[in-house]
Length: 131
Image: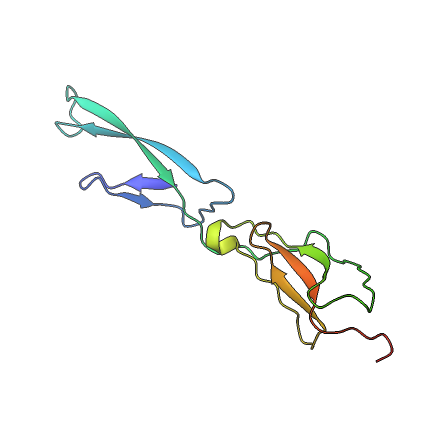
């Protein structure tokens, strides 16, 4: 997955298909040897630890594809109706979920709970079944 340039000691990526979600940490033993490759030279080793940082390469997904909630038309504005949950295999900011409604005006609001990363569904305006 990595190689070292013998003259400079620079460690480079050999395999461009590294994926932090499959393998995050690598341990490489590097050897330095004097007298080139001639027999009788002396050498020592060092351990190099490489940790991959995350890129945003995974889409969020809903493990549960459908949710059903009921709410009375007397529910007050701001009342919690329920929660939805999406997951993302990325880390940190790359895994931060933001929920929105797609393509429609809604009497409800959805906001991300910063503690749980769940979508919190609440009443946005007065509800009236007859309208």
